[in-house]
Amino acid sequence: MGDKQRVPSDQLLREARERFDEGIDFTVAVEEEFALLDPVTLDLVNRFEDVQAAAAGTPAEGHLAGELIASEAEIKTGRVETFADVPATIADRRAELAGLVAPLGLELGATGSHPWANWKDQRIIDTPHYRRNDELLRYVVWKNNTFGLHVHVGVKGADRAIQVTSALRNWLPELLALSASSPFAESVNTGLHSARTQIFTRFFPRCGVPDAFDTWDEYERYVRFLYDTGSITEHTQLWWSVRPHLAFPTVEIRICDGQPCLAESQSLAALCVALTARIARALDEGEPIVQQPHRLIEENMWRAIRYGLSGDLIDLERCEVLPARARIERLIEWVLPVASEIGAAEWLRVPEQNAAERQIARFEGGDDLARIYRDLTLSPSREG
Image 1 (cartoon, rainbow, N blue to C red):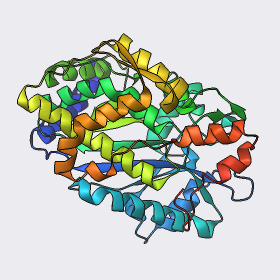
Image 2 (image 1 turned 30 degrees about the horizontal axis):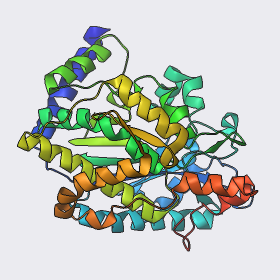
Image 3 (image 1 turned 120 degrees about the vertical axis):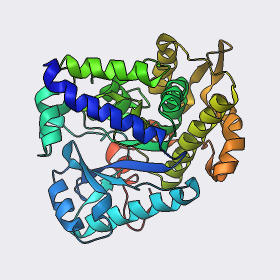
């Protein structure tokens, strides 16, 4: 098996390293996953192929992608050269997708999980990539009816990209706490603020918080091991919450829940890009960043999953427990100088309530799941 995999993995890794070494700092691409809904019942509906057909010849065609289940659609900004153009591009892509699905009699759900959908009713889309994942993962992939926001940030230099990825691990819980939007699943209040993260990262192999790597060579040895042992057949089968993407010279942040509110989607993208740029600046200038142990980051990750923005997070350097909001405000203060340089500063904010908190407050006030979820759907006339 090693001989069969060695040639493609050799070429993949060589070309990936070349792309990183020739890359451009802080280009951005944002990917958002949305649920396809019946407008009356708000149930998930397996109609991605209809959406794909309708996109032919429209502005959305080049930005639309299938994502695992046929009741899901992903819309991508494509590569944007500077962050200043990202917020408007996110808005444009959302509007394109909403306008595309409306004539098909569909609406879009934008939280990290559907409040009541049964995974048994969802169909895996028929592409070679997802057929392979279905054959490989079976029940694990069937259960993953979740929706996220991913941010790709260009980082020049293969070793530098690996070091940025390793440093970003420290702040994955902060990004998750800020983005949490999925307190409901399988018709219950899960008691979590991000049921999506629990479903996805605790089910999939090679998922959640990765190990830290110091150099490209160290990372490459690990990826070669996975190919040579038949553990993976595609590089995207490393489903970590942050990863160097081998098809693009980007670091991909994958921890965030899907966002029903456009402004919060734009703000999350701003923080992801500004944090990545701030880490790169620190590495360039010799500012020390401690690579926290996996076990300690996981303590914060559980806090973010369980309590989101309403809970506490640990300052791992000072061993100090802080409200999550205060922790994120400190993070924004740290990234702000670089954020100003790249045009992201005006988008950085901590909301009074994030999407999970708003939903939980309504539910605890006696509202039912259907009314709560309906107010979080996207349409051409509503931003979330």
